[in-house]
Image (cartoon, rainbow, N blue to C red; front, top):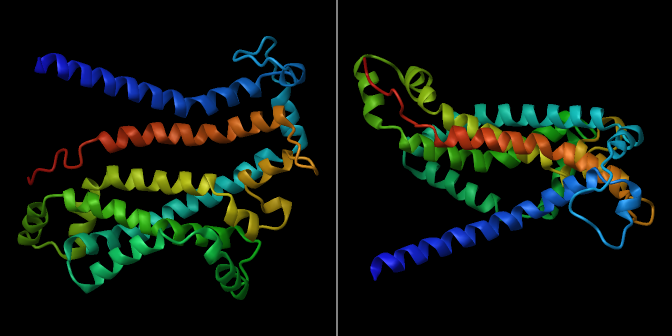
Amino acid sequence: MSLRTGRTARAGQYAALLCYLVFLAFPFLWLISTAFKPARELGSLHPTWIPEDPTLGNFRQAFDEQPLLRAAANSLTAALCAALIAVVIATPMAYVMARHRGRLSTAATGWVVVSQAFPFVLVIIPLFLVLKYLHLINSLWGLVLVYVVWSLPFALWMLAGYVRAVPPELEEAAAVDGAGKARILVSVTAPLLAPGIVATALFAFITAWNEFFFALVLLKTPEKQTLPVVLTHFLGAKGVADLGPLAAAAFLATLPSLVLFAVIQKRITGGLTAGAVKH
């Protein structure tokens, strides 16, 4: 009886997981279908999943109407710089938070929790004034600074968990051999944190790549706008979307996130302490 109950429960779990996957995949599959449909099918009263006459015209029109390559380059620059700077700053801070319990660590943890509770709208005005004082309005470096500050709490929280998973005995053995704190962090702890560092950097990259609100407010000239902002240009003056080119451009903008998430899955499942043996 218990075996049958267990199989029924597992079947129910798999069914729920399948429904959830279908729920998540539906928007993306419909986006792909729309991107390859001609205008005649997009206006049909009886839409179909698979385009009857697939076309690449929407992609050509999207590149002709908007500077997608330049916007993608801006997004790539901002996302890469923000991810690298956030990881460089967060790694030693996460080590201190995880290894040295005290008021500083408690305050940092509180900052991580509280910072995630503030919506973008509440901070945009003081943030705008600070960046204006620093002459960083309408600047990609100003946007990078915002992304670094915004991603640091999550990066700290994530990396601190990886640091706690590293056996302290390895660091103690290195200290016995005469290594200092900096040498231990660089030569012993950092290599073991490689999966966590890569995963954190990728999450920070994807967050910056997809971010829209800060880029919309802080970047004014078309030459510096990022890809999420440029996608809004496919909306007409009355809010009517040029659906085919918009779907094509949105599909291309989504591909980097999908690829990076696939990489994240491989890195996260990798062993944190693989090969962590003192020779």
